Length: 223
Ligand SMILES: Nc1nc2c(ncn2[C@@H]2O[C@H](COP(=O)(O)OP(=O)(O)OP(=O)(O)O)[C@@H](O)[C@H]2O)c(=O)[nH]1
Ligand SMILES: [Mg+2]
Image 1 (tube, rainbow, N blue to C red):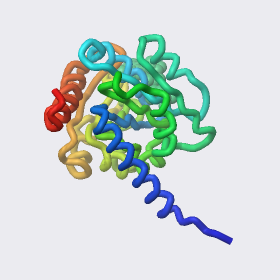
Image 2 (image 1 turned 180 degrees about the horizontal axis):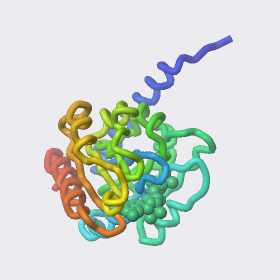
Image 3 (image 1 turned 90 degrees about the vertical axis):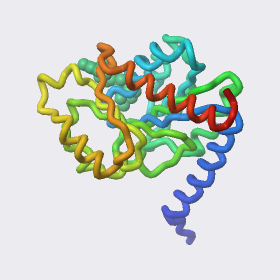
């Protein structure tokens, strides 16, 4: 009987993710992994970001869901090239799924590739997808205690976007509490408070992301 340890699977994932990152670097594609709970507002955030970025950056999206193509259809509706991955039960994407999905794109026509991970605050934390940035989306309706309860995903993220800020007056969400937790878990990660639906706070988030993309291409002497 053969027992394949989870550690070995994670190591294989890390190796493949490193190869993917190399491929993205060589193609000058900046890759962002968006994580968060089901319904946090990940797809709505992408829609709002594209409304701001589409003229300056050529985007594409990989949508990860257990089933269905609802989010991919939303991307198609706004003219963004998209590939849908159905994990058929798995609670996260992995590097092998990304390697397969990426074959469907012409990378020479993409500057910024978003990967919308499966809605989950646990499994998604452990799997590098070859991204350059990981952004965690937390909505006000989920509560301000989530960084304490699910530290790994917050610790491993390069930015926190608090969404549905328009609903904050009706909820018991204290942004200062999550800011204090982030200071402990990920002190260098900026926090943005947005309403993707109403537009509040979106310019700052979009500007920060554009600056990260420009910074990377400047470093590589592409621009
Ligand atoms: N009020 C308000 N509602 C929002 C906001 N962002 C998203 N929503 C709503 O929240 C619900 C879920 O949004 P989605 O963007 O589909 O969430 P998601 O994280 O992509 O969901 P999954 O892909 O299923 O995990 C929808 O009904 C959105 O209209 C926001 O900023 N304010
Ligand atoms: Mg979605």
